[in-house]
Length: 435
Image (cartoon, rainbow, N blue to C red):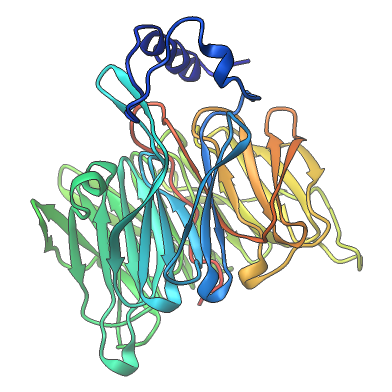
C-alpha cells in the first residue's frame, strides 16, 4: 500500500507537471509528451547515497529508487568511513574519519512551499572539518557530529551542530571545542547538546555536560552529577536521554527544575543504544545481550532478539548491525551469520527473520543499514556481492537486490520525510571505533 505522504507528494508532483511548471532544471513537459520520458518506476521513493572506498579513486553514488537507476556519482576527496542522512533527509553526510572531514551531498530532493524539487544531486563544496569525526547523532531536526580529537597532538575533541536549513545556508548552527580529546558523543536534545567529557586528555569518556544553544554558540552548564565511566552510546526520546556506562545506563530527564540524572544499574556494559520520540523504551546492546531500557520506570529488561539462532560453528549469533526504522515500529538486527531479525518495537516481540547475506564482513567491509523515511523498506549493503539488499519489514522478506559494480562502503536514504525533519534517533554510529 502506498504511504499517505508519498501519495500526497505524487499528486503534488503531477499537478505541478500538468501546470507546465519546471522541475528547477529549466525543463518543461507538455501534455502528450510523457511517452518521450517513460522509464521503469518502482514503488520505492527516495534516493540512496552509497559510498565507495577506493583510495584516491573513492566516490559516492546516488541511486534513484523510483526510476531504479543511478542519478549521479561524484569523486570524493578521501575514502568514506560512513555515510549518514541529514535530519530532514535532504542531504548526505559523508564522513572521512581518517582525513578529519565530512563532505556533504545534496540529494536534489526537497519540498519548498507548495512544490516539490526533484533536481540532480550535487556534491557541495562545503566540508565539516575537525579531528577524527566519529559519532553522529540526530534528533528532532538537528544532528551533531562528534570529533574525537587527538591527545598526542593537543587537538581537543569538539562537536558541530547542524540542520537541513543550516546546511542549505550555513552550514552550521554552532560548534563547540571541549577540554580534552576523547572518544565521545554529542546528543542534540531539547535546545541543548548533551556532550561527553573525560577526566583526562585521551582517556575514556566519563560523564555528560549539557551545552545550551544560544544563537550561533553554546553556553556550558555544570556537568551532570551522575558519573558514567566508560561512556559509550546514547539516544533520546521526548522525555529522556540515555547513555551507556560501564556500570549501567545514565538516564537524564529535563524538568521545569532543570536536568535530573540517575543511574540504571546493570551488570553488563551497554555500548550501543537506539530510541525514537514515540517510544517510551530504548533498545541497547551489551555484547550480544539486548536490553529494553525504560528510563521513566528505571528498568532494564533482557530481550530475546535471536530466538536461539546459531552461526555455522554452532555458536550463538552476535549482532553485526542494528537500528530502529524511521517510524519507531520495527527494530532490525542483522546478526553475524547474515540473518536479519525484525522485532516489533511496541513490545519487542519477534516479528520474523530472513537470511540476507552469505558473508558478514567487518571494518570497511561491514554491512550498513538504512531505512526509508516514508515506507517500510530497509536497505542493507552487501560488500562481498557488490549489491544492496532491499527488505520489506512488514512481510520480513527480501524484495529486491540492487546490483552495483563496486563494493558499497556506507549507505544513507535521502528523500522527503514526513514533516520535514527526522524524529528518529540514529544508532550509536561509530562503527569500528568502539571503546
